[in-house]
Amino acid sequence: MSETNQPSSGRTKRAGAAGGRQAGSAASGGAKGSRQGNASRASKGLVQGSAREAALDVLVRIEQDRSYSNLLLNQTLQKYKLDKPDAGLATEIVYGTVQRLGTIDFFLERFVSKGLAKLQPWVRTLLRLSFYQLHYLDRIPDHAIVNEAVNIAKRRGHQGISGMVNGVLRSVLRSKSELVLPAGLPAEQRIALAQSHPEWLVRHWVREFGERTAERLCEANNTPPRVSLRANGLKLGPGELAERLRQGGLEAEPSAVAPAGVIVRGGGNMALSPDYAAGLYSVQDESSMLVAEWVDPQPGERVLDCCAAPGGKTTHLAEKMGDRGEIVACDVHEHKRKLIEEQAERLALRSIRTLTADARRLAEHFAPESFDRILLDAPCSGLGVIRRKPDMKWSKSEAELAEICDIQRELLEAVHPLLKPGGVLVYSTCTVEKAENEDMIRAFLERHPSFEADLPEVPETIKDRLDEELAAVRIMPYDYGSDGFFIARLRKRA
Image (cartoon, rainbow, N blue to C red; front, side, top):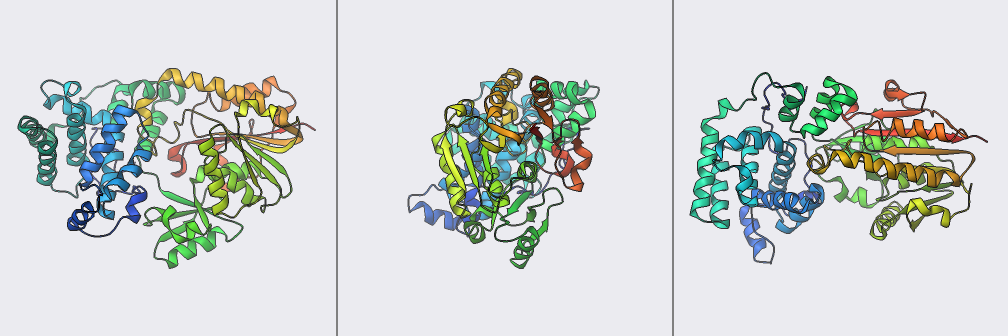
């Protein structure tokens, strides 16, 4: 069990401030220096502020606008221009507070007489992020956390608010030994509080997988993801990339999960390096890298990537084909189509053609049986990547899980006629939901006897996760430390 997950009490062993998380894009690119450096930058029209103020801004907007934490964090770090340590702290506070929100609110409620819900959003958020630091981090002295929270309250509010913030946080400090979950809670409520997940979602997973698996899944969702890179096979292999990174002073080793993958530690934002700009690698999760292995495109083939943005899988397909043949990469949004083109240009790939189109209407653009291979990386609930987007668990609803299945079914029905006889159709999602995964493929095969499951060669590491009947793999976030994912491969009978 990870040291950051102790379900028996709801408390955690507090880790250092950027405990394994990667700061956003400003983290590695911001100027190095002290608070004096921040002050000098303010004179140039940039925002002056602390890591906690930046985190406060992000967290308030997440709650009010329902925006994704990763996108807001990158924007805010760029605005504040924090140095690397402060950017790392802001990143830790944002992700940690969102991840542990349910537990934080459970404990804070006893210290706020009128209830958290009646506080102004920024005051409620300030208490939450301060509680997160007091309860889950150990690098920063408690008095410093309280003092800065009070100072922020003074600047943004008035004496009454700062006094309330001071009183609540000092009460928290006095009661630290009492911050434990009640004994004898029902399993679903205990897991929801200890692992800070919505109770409806825990209840759903207990029904789906059983109590122990549901708890392991929640624990994994609170574990910071590691950084994995995909070597551009047209320029170098994963072993060569790992050695190159080690020579640059980083810890790096080839992935045991994805043949093209490299695990790296201590590199900050790897999308800011010269090697990234030169197209030597892409930043991609190991589970996601397996999708192109499942498709296994061959040089000279015509491949359709139906829901392709932002282009990670598309470019991997092109690399595996030796950039020979044609990949048609579609996305329904024009601005996302441009992201695919940017990645193809960075990697110097010429076999990719992009198209803005709804994948449910691709028959209007292409003749039947005109592709050798089709990848449908379907829109999904995303419940396999909660550790990357922790706000997702608080914004999803049970009704949405059923709605997304309808879209997935429509997509499968729309794209399969475009496949040549003998061709390969790969369906993938970044969720662990059976309804979106195994049930979806099983129902498709029942409707379409002209298709059959077609198991590819797979890395030895993941063979114990295979469903041979469906030629599929479902990876849970706790299996290998990679994202929760599902991949199935079907072949159209010749």
